[in-house]
Image (cartoon, rainbow, N blue to C red; front, side, top):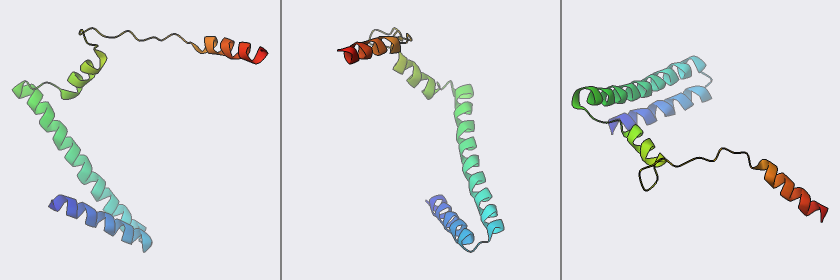
Length: 98
């Protein structure tokens, strides 16, 4: 909870510095806030990778992606990549001619 309060305060300080036209201080506050968020994301990724390597934890995103591509019987669905725009243009032109 204290991290959230600190983040809110830093953004409030950022806005105050920008309104006061103290752009150097605003840039410093922005850099610190972005660095903190980047470090949090990197720490989360490190924990996830360590879990995969040392504990055999599967990557949740890969599991979700493969489930999205599979249909009910476990086979991947075929994707229609044909361009049907020619058919619709012909249909539209025949309607205009009438």
